[in-house]
Image 1 (cartoon, rainbow over the protein chains, first blue to last red):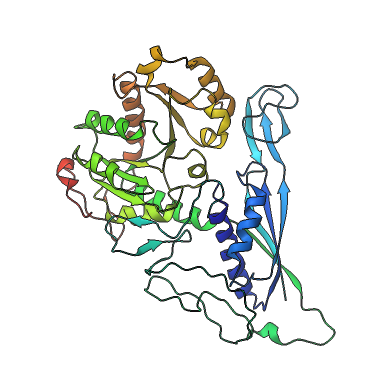
Image 2 (cartoon, rainbow over the protein chains, first blue to last red):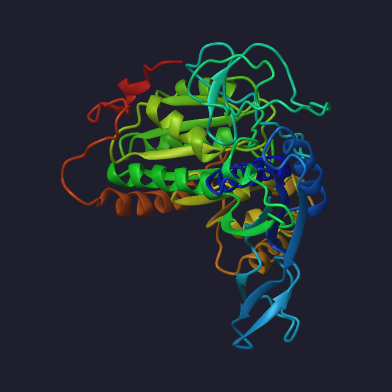
Length: 113
Length: 329
């Protein structure tokens, strides 16, 4: 979706964290993007390169940790790994799934000087 | 700019704004008339530490930089790396979600049942909305927030029904966000205990990710589109509580497989409710109205007796919703 808006969100969170920690420079930004979070990771990288200019993260490298999608299968009564919404349970091939994880987008940590 | 859909965030405009005012994705509002970008390629050593203060008019010169050269971390101890990790753990959409929660609370306090209508462009949302408002006349007052990239045609169509409506133009933006709704709520003469319809920008991708503070997302899919849309855009159908399969009066002229479409929607979202509907023939309208009325009835049971709006909300004309059409635009 709108990776530019997300990149702006990352920049703001990083700016705030840098400011409150008295950082001179942000060397790295680590974000977690769930595989079900509707984010095109390469588009996010590109967008971040654009929006970071002039911010505390001006020279920061972006590290993206992708987390797996997980869901509760109501037929198998167990947690399974899925790669997208609308995908079947890898065990029983049915679609009675409730997404339980892998849909988050978070700034995990920053490395500062 | 959003690489998927061309979304930019510097041109959003809510009716009532003066020329040049706009709202950024982070909620800041300011005006300036020049196009600019902040790509500064030069290395620079200057020491000033400044940042944007928003909610005011300002000129961008060399502004837009944050410099931290003066901070305590500037004291370098020779031989020691100052580099350290700081745990942040914040959701990227936290700012939007916090405003959305504020909107939800504000709507709840006034007994307003808010729906976020999402679809592709051309699914018939606005026509369906007009018919819905006409049918709800005398049952529940309706107010509308219209989102489009450009023009206020849709808001004008809604106002013609007598319902209050406000148009948000997102400029290059591909979706409404919670901040835009917060501003619109302050200007919209929505009655207490009413139904608020938010017609999102026609787009089955981006609006799925942005909570506006609504009670439910309702996805409108028309039979002129394709049975496989729920599989192509699973996030949206997953986020929606209800799917309206619209324009079913056209089915005799099409090769649209209704059962396959419904199966696809349930594959993505097993619990989704579905109503087959036609704004033209009226088929399914009674079910849709009953669905709205059920939700609105729950919303009207709000805590505390005194219906009080948040600061800045235009006081509603409760007994005469039709008269509330007069508003700023």
